[in-house]
Length: 165
Image (cartoon, rainbow, N blue to C red; front, side, top):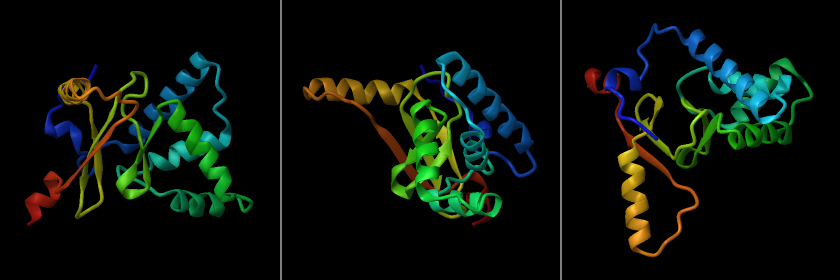
């Protein structure tokens, strides 16, 4: 579980084929739903597509605004139910510190959330390093603590913002 990824692959460069990112996420969602007997409705699919529309976390009300432009009857419960479904399937992560959502880069394998969040441009990247999970599990076990969920959010500057300073 988890692997170390080179920094070149973590933060996407401007001009990369973002359409391919979105298509891959939607294809994976369709496949996971089929395998798990879940329904990827048109609305759930659209919310996932909007989450993946950039590599920046997006808030539920920002998603709602985008949906209202397309569907005038969109309401907060609609967005939250879709997000709950997508989180449950592992297709989306909630970034607690930002109260925002981001597409999962590896929904086919269960993992804990580890994020690098740029405080300048707002981009975020998911990392999955088994050593971090192992350290948390070992320290928790030593303390007699049972971990049910953990999410690590690291704030700093992405490579692009660091190079412009």
